[in-house]
Image (cartoon, rainbow, N blue to C red):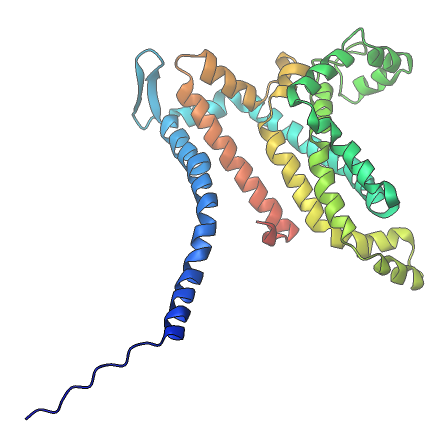
Length: 311
C-alpha cells in the first residue's frame, strides 16, 4: 500500500506579489525604451536602408528604379563632385571653429559674470532661433547685398581690401556670392548650438575652485588653463558636435548667400534628386557617403577628445 501523497505547498500571497512586482520591474525598462527604439527604426534605420538600396539602383523617374548593384554611383560622387564635398567639409569646419572662438567667451561671461542677468542673456542668445532659419538667411542676403550699408561701410574702412588679400573675397565691392558670406551665415545660424552646451558645462563649475586657484597665486590665464578648460571640455565637445553635424549637411546658406563657386554637397543632392530624372541613385549615394563620413569624423573626434561617454 503506497503512502498518501502530500500536496505541494501553495505560494503565499506576499510571495506572489513579489513575483509579480519583479516581472513588472523587468518589463518596465523595455516599455520605456519602446518609443525611442520605434522612433529610431522609423526615422533612422528605415531611411538609411532605403538610401543604401537606392544608391545601387539604376533607372529613371519615368521608367522606375531597380536594384542593379551599380556601385558606379559612388565613384561618380568622387570624380564629379569632389569640389562640392570639399566645400562642405571646409565651410562646416570653419563654421565650427569660429563658433567655438566666439561662443566660448560669450558662454564664459554669462556663466561667471552674468549675475542676475543670466536668464535674460541666454534668452537673447536663443532669441533668433524663434524666427525661421530660411527667413533669417534671406534677411542676411539683403543686409550683405552689394548696395547694402554693411558693404559700403566695410569698403569705406578698406576692410574689404584686407579681406581680398586674405582670400575671403574675390573683389572689394562684393560680399555676397563668396565663401565669406556662406561661412558668415552659417556662423550666425549655428552659434546658439555652440553656446548652449558650453554655458551648461561652465555653469556647473564650482566657483570655489577659482577662489582656491587664486589663493594659490595662480593667474587668471593659468586658472582657466588648468581648471576651467578641462572641466568645460564636455561642453566644448558637445557644442562643436551640435554645430558641425548640421553644418556639414546645410545647403541653405550656400544657396542663399553663395554663388556658383560655393556649391556644397547638399546643393548637389538637391539638384540630383529633384531636378534630374536619372539622378536619384547618385543623390542617394552622396547622402550615404555624407552620413558615413560625418559618422567617422565624429567618432574620431570624440575618441581623440576623450569624451566617449557623450555617445
